[in-house]
Length: 109
Image (cartoon, rainbow, N blue to C red; front, side, top):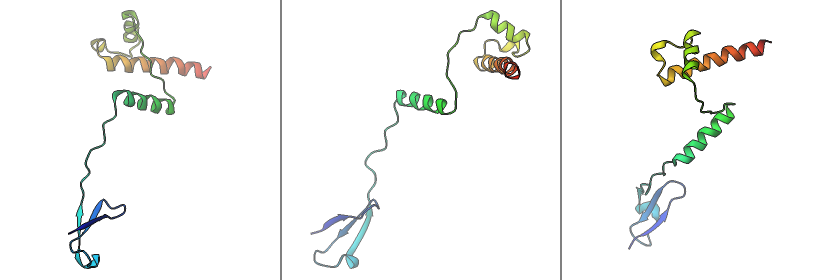
């Protein structure tokens, strides 16, 4: 007959093979594998995590609509290459550059 007692904090289980014998002589240590993996965060939890991180960083996330004439203005000002007018990342970078330029002037006034 064997008895099992969990070892504290180690994730191991100590088994005494012979009852009545000191465990130091007949102890057998085996690792117990975790039964489940941690659940992945939900999409809502991930959005909230990103929102809180942006807030800590002093940022706001906005969705804006640009008219074609506004994209044309970014091209005329040399902030956007004409061939990249339909590339989301290029337009975003051009708009950031425009805002930095415009708001930088406000900060200097």
